Image (cartoon, rainbow, N blue to C red; front, side, top):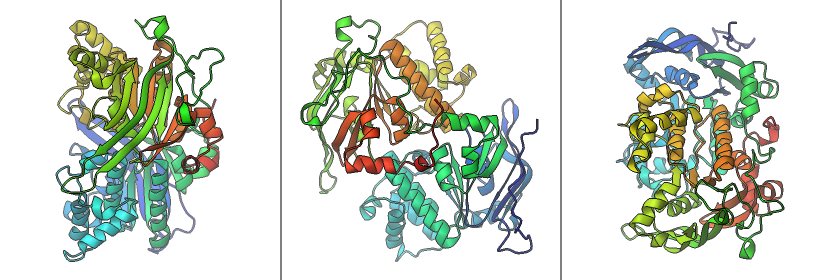
Length: 587
């Protein structure tokens, strides 16, 4: 069956009238990548039409060709990639075959880009303000005299608080969401006619996500700017795009008006995507095994979910008497970072108390900068608390000797938010996953190799990928590798910091189900940090809401989503994209 889909047409289009013709027309586009094993077709016969002032979303899983299609438009394919057929017409001008010198005058000024991975797209040794200023100066939109003021205005428009101060900071001083906002500021700086947004809000919490998307929408309305939105978030596509294109294995399999596509999908693959999309309307996905009659009881002051509630199956080697109660207890935890060069100290976390019952999942939600990741890093002993206590399995982690800390590191494993910076680019995927096993002398070489293959299969990656390097993988594939590595030592507690934010909905669904299966089988406990409340609804037993470093509400997942009490919690829930469209996961 031919899965190619003709481009969307408009009866009013007149190719002789610049005002009525599409801003972007892609026709029968084919893109191939040269590899050591020959040419690989990444996009085959893709066609789409984007009209002025409209937003077109391309959705599909990792490796479907959606980002490759977008990068072909802006002329930023990797060195081994080339357009092998078809046409790309932007504002009446053919871009395929256009000299690079001419393409540079279009790129940035007329076609802006917000790339997906903020850490690898921001210069780590250059201040954020300098990187924004470079874009404005190169395209003649600012002078040396007024560039600083314009940089602050651009950063504020992208939703970055304290923009003047932030402009003088470096990328490593920003949270993941703040780095993404800096990239958005750079992409919007020249007020382009076409903005290519490649997963522009995947690292952002829902309230800031709405701010950014509202800003993009304001540009569309005010300037007639068109947006080519690349996303795996179907709710976001439904809410923000006028039209949707669905890609699968390099081909466009369905396209049309956004709401129609997502309410009444025709292609089997589109139906699969819609069915896998998480929704806050769907209750906990495969809850952990619980003791009969147990309920969550808030701790003193009602601030935290208590550990008397849930108990999963005991982890291998754990005595039955240890299989109940809390695996982690955090009391009065605070963290203050000393200011640099006379600047004021920064209070990142203040007086946070929470418990993680064995075999359960406790989620921490909140905006970027709310303190949720800092709390997780203190639990992982990556940074020391200013005050307060953290106990793991009844022992104060700040008092561990060398042997105790070594044991702790095996029993508690992290999954970090940014898979690119947490994977060694010089190691193969197999070596990355094997490294914790080798470090702790688990098994023979052949047994470790077998375990690597088992873990790759568990996270839906082909075993042949063991010989590849992180740079050869998509963002979603890299995150799956990070999850496989965290599972290697069969830990008792996994601290998950945005573990599925980079994944498309199908793989996200697989990973969430995998985490649930592992929890039931081994009695795993999770601290799950996320800005995606629909995902939190599916994975968590208890939810803690943080704002400005403080815990403002905590209860069972059901209570938080059905009857939120704090105004900030209600604001978070109201900001979820696509929520009002009723796009729900199939049971």
